[in-house]
Length: 341
Image 1 (cartoon, rainbow, N blue to C red):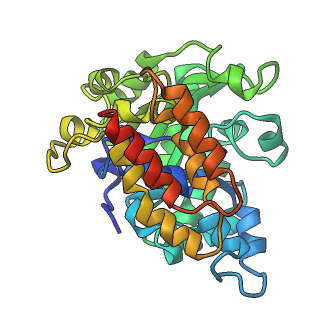
Image 2: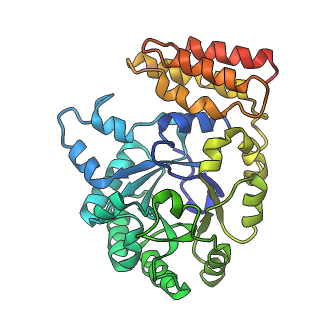
């Protein structure tokens, strides 16, 4: 496993549905070895049902699809969604059994589907329910339990409302708060609009850290560059990036040196990222799985240079074939190397 102290994670890549799967996390490990990487959100009830299927832990089984990851992904956190303390405790035990470094409770997603499942941002209106969930999770295993949430929801967006949420959840055992510095509108805005329309309020997150200095506070929302993250790290304990990491992965090659003071990894190029994925792709293909789920994440590795569009088209076509082998990645890496990328 990787680090175990939540306060040591100064930089992380946010959980993002349809993006931060096991393959993207391996890609990011070519770029940063020290950052905390999150899974996509997994619903606790889905884990409960999957764990009871015959051969649940078999390679390629449903539980493996939900929880499986490669050891080189450490440190890696499992994000779960739910509002049932017993189911979340079970999910925590599973996360520990599968070797995760941390478990994170989603109290930030504002989607209508998530609300119907009684979890996500709507739980900010029930801080003591969240506290019960966190307490059950903390008692279930030694894994650190953390929470990702907004600064408020709908009309409950006063600073006092935020403290009324954070304080009981902290008392229940939450070891880090990843705070998206926007409120969420549960009605009237879709998830995409909720990432952009409500204004960013970094000042609220800064005040939370000042008023609760003993808590580990991580800021999320609108961080588009490493310089922006470093500026925030003067006032909070951690910086979390989301779509900026997915859309521009090579922009973060200096994270380990500048955030963690670790200069042991040499600067990473696009060709090194692609070539670094080959051993993993070989392991993945040996399971009978397709290459495309890995290759689909490479479309943003090359950007802003002549021929980038053609390169993306070529690797998409080659890796999309059902019988595509890791040699596709080797050829793509060689193409980049020949162009000095």
